[in-house]
Image (cartoon, rainbow, N blue to C red; front, side, top):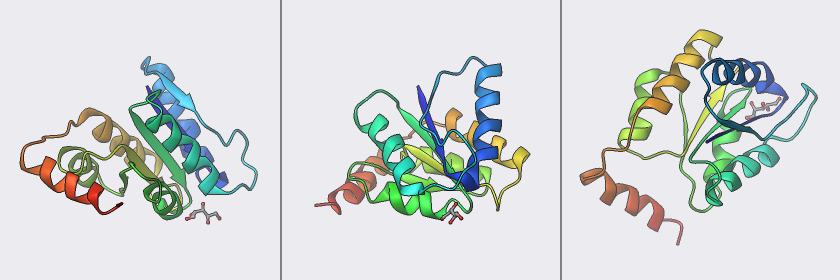
Length: 144
Ligand code: RB5
């Protein structure tokens, strides 16, 4: 299950990604916002992160205007690794090397088609483990 959320700056991309999920029978949890009205991105980041931490979702997508606010907020939450990506290579690496739970996108930065390609790459890639596990463990140890 994939959690997805946005603020007003990422609303159009969220709807576009949801359409892709629906057309491809990909299960998702829409954590809002549900209308393109000004709201605070940390609230949405928290909702998506909580759905990962409570086990109801295994990946998340957060969209705001730049992707930056969402990634800063999500990475403040213990246990979460969020990757702000503007290209498909980074999206793939964020899974393979960093075992990122959450992809952050910026609607005002990344166009629709590229954003969707980034989502597909992020969802298709798997963590490679091995030497990368030790490094991810060290990242998580930084929380303590
Ligand atoms: C909202 O105007 C904007 O600040 C937000 O979507 C995001 O880009 C913050 O990082």
